[in-house]
Image (cartoon, rainbow, N blue to C red; front, side, top):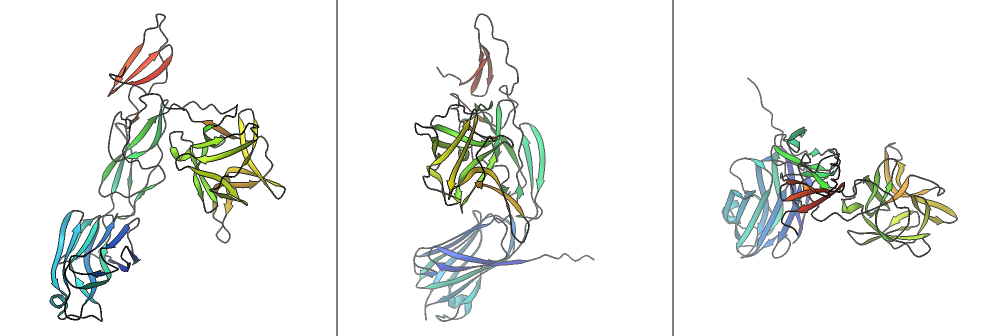
Length: 424
């Protein structure tokens, strides 16, 4: 005879205001919660609603739901509805007197909303609609067990790249990188498979945690990269650039946060890495703005800040380094500053200011080229655009045309052009 031990967890959500509730206890990793009441805090009059919605639960089994309530002295009624996704799994209609045995405007009492356990819950919604003045919600208490681990199959075109399985239900998986090709640049993962499109669906970036709602597949997403051949700026002109470290192929990314910034693998098609850099006539000063958010990139003391600070420029050939001078000392804008946490010895890197002399370095500016007309995204880098050699140009100037999906790849005079079909 075997004994199956089910480990139960409990989380509670206490109402703080008409638009918020605070959670405590054991929460599924990565979950999100929202609360809203149409009147105030947890007060539900006739016609009012109070809704708690918990999402990204990782397929938990909900064992029990209790809502702690009180009422007016001699009245207070409503209808509870519980949904797993869009499916109603529980309901209770009546008054506090029906549920508890009497009205009570002093003490809160638990009201149970489920008759039996319900498995595979990713989104849980609890709604109370008032039918008579008034009910008052203090908190929600949910008892549950973790869902089964789920497996994500990673696809690269028609080929299986690998599998990732959660350590436990709801733990999520860390998404890996996928290799670039000659013309296609990997940018992330998609829940849907597609061939040639100009606007991709939601993309999950490599390094992020993905929470599957079931066993599923993700497809590697690629972008046709007009910046595939990296030619760094030798003449400084105002424009859009990536600020890169060529030694480790990293680029500045995002905006300042708590005095620091981040960097990531060079990806000209990633808008988080694109900065508009303005050079005055002298070219020895620059101003940097994050293009996607229009956030200035500057410094306050020795910390990074979202302020329009002037940067000094060290430039030699195709090397470009930004720096500033503070109290007579030079600090370079470096992408890989080492930071060793005191006490733990943990070593991390960030982008920020590093006291050093501005001299020759691997830092450079990579101009961001405009994508050709009809530039596209795909989950199938094995399409005809993925070629390493271009057929020799024919002496009569005749074009070679290769078809895929809604696009034509035209090869003429040793150059490649991507055009949408029927485009003039």
